[in-house]
Length: 494
Ligand code: NAD
Image (cartoon, rainbow, N blue to C red):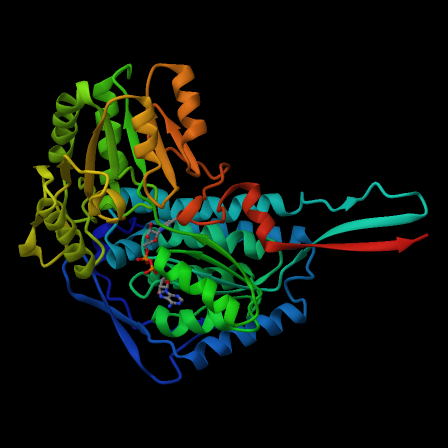
């Protein structure tokens, strides 16, 4: 049989999509839908169900019932493992189909979508499936007339709310450990990036996840997201998205059942280049990728470049050469290196950031425009703004688009002060050939990760999370598993 191609998949119509509740696809009880606009060409791709509070409450009730009767929670970990490994296989077998679906929905270029979305999701289900039958309880070192047992108990019903960038990768980082630990789950994808996650819910059911254990409710954050976060039946909330929404979730938690909230939020990550960097050409190339891949729509994007004064002009010119050489275009064309900006409002917000930077005295070194407008899609040229001051909008606030702010510094002390000069603390980069300086910077920068002589490397085995207003949780690695368990103790008098 001939292999299905990207063009075959691109041409397939996508039928209107319902929620996935209690093991079946269903429309919203109101019958309302939302149009899904493809950023590739600005056209309507399909519709998703516009969820209502009643839809969300039905999903949460289903998840609660599934948890209470133990159809998943009380299975042996090895049985849950078997199902999660099968799910990983199913995703891998349909990786191209899933990746193309996601690209049509959210504009990430296909090479990245295949690797960082579909294959990464499969790897995540495999990772947590593999580890779950190796989690042991403990016997506490009490006096001999007592037995103190420490169990890992699933928390119950997990509410997960995820953003539109890398929905599948980030979704899997939450779904896989939550299910592995024996919880039931209700997932609320971003309204503009639901399609690939709905597909994963179907495949999970095919792999053997029992009905009601994994539910997906689509629709607006202010409606179904809010209902999920306010629910008295949701035990923990795991979230990736903006700080503004994260702040609301903490309020909803306080107003309802004080559920624990794990928040993965935005960033304004500094990438610091010292004049003793061994290979400045390489640093410029990697720094360009660190901000411009996926059109800058990466939470850990190195969006503030801090460069030592005496190499500033040369380094920025080299970085702009890389920025201008990127092939921006149709994300389903394998030769494109950068795809579309996710939506028209996002594109307009990016351009507004550039305008405000101009108004505040920054100098545009490259990019700054909407491009390929004749396609109807949302594309923007990689943009470098130099001379950005500490007090400027572009220095302080996350763009979440392909816009780099450049600020010069004199010495290490000033670099560190500038690096820590925002409310965020997600990621950072340091380029230097001085090992002691590298360690001092790793120690001094207040962020979840500091890359040294590279930018943006990551692996499933390494936790990802922010500090300060970039959040309080960690996805990935064995550390992430902990939040899906409660520690439950038994005190047995012998
Ligand atoms: P967003 O906060 O607008 O939306 C995220 C999710 O929250 C969506 O599903 C949305 O529908 C939902 N939501 C919105 N309002 C809600 C409400 N009132 N109640 C409940 N849910 C609500 O974020 P976004 O624009 O989708 O994503 C971009 C942001 O995510 C950026 O700030 C980015 O840095 C951040 N992000 C962080 C990480 C990380 O690991 N720290 C990873 C990726 C993205």
